[in-house]
Image (cartoon, rainbow, N blue to C red):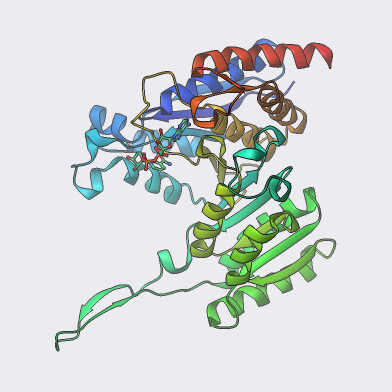
Length: 371
Ligand code: NAD
């Protein structure tokens, strides 16, 4: 029995409250059984926050997020808020909370459940059992580098420019997250760069190599150029275990890897900051958006959010057994043929969000009774 952890739920907009509601039931299930006790608090973000407070993220909610042991977010956005000025848009709330919490490492697993292998656009044998983890640097690189802009050259020409920069400490802190993960998994880490062209990523490669030698000699580190990595991800994805890369390369490669799994409704993520004083700033969220087209229709797939919660148990609280229980529950439900509409396949049983939620609770009861 662990001490109470402070958990902040930020359901957001669209299907956000529906998918968070399902995970809330799972958290309550753990609580009732005396396995885990969370002090659960809930706040507003995105359009819901704009409607209540005129801002997509209030200072008060941000303060509560900073004080929480972990944050679980649903999704933000929707047509209702599309015409707001840039700074008020729901998505600004998301960018702000990531930035203010200093979440520099974005973990995006690409896991193919055997029961869903046929949903991938790649051949089943290439992806069945796939389980890779991409660690993307999230707060530096070309998306944030200065100078940036578009300038008028005065002769009818304009020039657009951005700056790719990384410092030693920015590289090493995200490197450490990836090496630690590799150490807990297969002991293999692949760092992806473009060191044959970009000096900044020459530094990236040098620092990753040094870090490995100094602090993680037990982890086997390899390097790959990003163009080759994109090819290898669709040619033979199972060669990878943990990947670490820059902000922009990670943005592109993680979407590419996501598609190997076949469905947006099945993709979790974690964003982590620097651990200090026994606390790890962390935010967990599904990769998908607020899906306004199906919001309120009891059709949303809650499994990406539930897997995000499982990542929280693993990475924020080191509760491996409980995370395994959640993951096994999901795998069993899929193997039994239950599918929300987005992952429906011929011969399977199409169920609503709430029916899937009931089945999750029943499976948790069953697995824990037989443990
Ligand atoms: P989306 O991810 O919301 O939806 C894309 C498609 O996938 C839709 O057809 C949707 O019904 C389906 N889908 C997504 N999640 C699903 C789930 N859990 N179960 C079943 N089907 C699911 O992307 P979009 O349509 O481009 O964006 C909609 C809104 O969400 C926009 O306002 C956008 O800015 C926002 N958005 C937010 C986030 C976030 O909060 N992290 C991410 C992406 C988009």
